[in-house]
Every structure is written in C-alpha cells, then in structure tokens.
Image 1 (cartoon, rainbow, N blue to C red):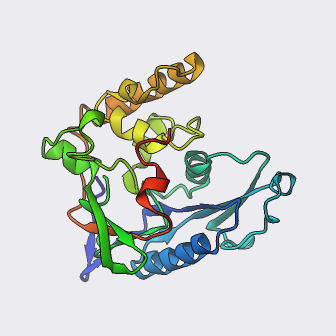
Image 2: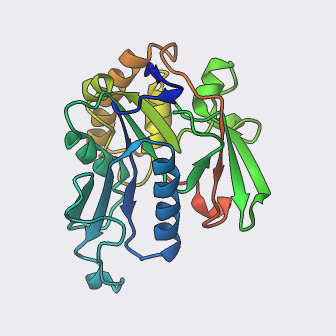
Length: 265
C-alpha cells in the first residue's frame, strides 16, 4: 500500500496516478456529465488524473451517433485519445494502455469508475461501503454493498450462492503498486463482456475458476487461469489486500437490476 508522506499537513501524491476511462458508443450525455464531475472531484483532491477516451469507428455502421471526443484534448499530456474498430467492453483494455503511457516517476496507480464520489478525499479497494443511489442522489439510497476487500478482511461470505445474504462488491475503485500491476500483466483485457472486476476479485483469493461459466471457451479459460495465478501470487490469499475506511456513493444511471451485476458476464 502506498506510503503517504506528509509535508506541512498536505499529502504528497506526486507518485500516484488515477486513471478514469471514457467510452460511450450510444453517446449518453449522463456519462459525460458524470466524468466532468468526477474530474473536478479528483483534481480538488490533488491527484494526477490520466484520462483515456476511446471512440468506435464502426458506430455509424450500427446506426449509432457519430463519435467525437468529448472529455479529452489532443494537446493535453495526461489525455489519451484512442480509436477502436469494434464496439466491445473496453474498460480493462483502456486501463492497460493508460498504464503503459504513465510517466516513469509514477509508482502507484488507481483505476476508478467515474460514476462514483468518495465520502472524503484521503487517497487497495478504495472503499468500505458502496451506496447505490437513486435519481435524487444522496437523498435516496436504494441499496448498499460492502467492498470485496472488506469482505476478505472481515471473513464475510464470498459465495455467489449467498449473494442475497451478502454481496461483496468486486469493482468501482482499486489501487495497487505499479510493480505489482506490471507483474500480473495488467488487467484482464480479454474480458469483453464486463466480468473483469469479478475475475480480478476472485483471483485475489486464488478462486478465479469460480467465475467461469460451464460453457467457457478453453482459450479464454487458459488465459484467465494464467493471469489469475499471477494475481493470486501477489495477493497471497487475500493477506496482501486492504481497503480504505471510506464510503462511496454510486450515482444513478439506470436501475440496479438492469445493470446486471450478477447476471452479466
């Protein structure tokens, strides 16, 4: 975990990079608004933000809006603008590309979804409790989940058969040392249907196989197992995993059921 060095009461965050990603084939305005709010929130926290935005050149072919950059600038050294030929789940892929482009002095990296906001600003799952908000924001808390890392540290059930009793949230915000990130080979960018967070979380416990569908392609299985072994080696059965004692609020942009946390793969 990063050692925060104190200077006159301020945190030295110059070796930490925070990576948000933005890709939006349907061009929902909400996503851009959420990103801009997140950007403001992070910059007020004093962290270095490295944003990667991806456009899809095949969007018009599928009757989707024309793709133009919305949140990044070509002349900003902390912005990456990419074009992908196919419309796929790109989150882990984009994070890996961003990490490859980080300045050499960066020692710590965090990848954070842009539809959340931290309770406080201390800057590895970066929260204890996630509040799933309704359309009225913090005035309407519809559901809450404890983080996967909290569940590890407090011996809570991590069992898909018991999700109604206890759902350990595997995503939203993680951070780790850059050398550990490099050792595990980055995030699992082959997870194009959105199960990257789940693979990562269970791999921390050397249980990635529990996230596989019975019909899983053998090549995918092999890639995931090889990657998961490296993650497990770093995590040491969860002993090297921590969390921050802060809460986050997840902003409303669709019902929890439609987001398919459990069903999507």
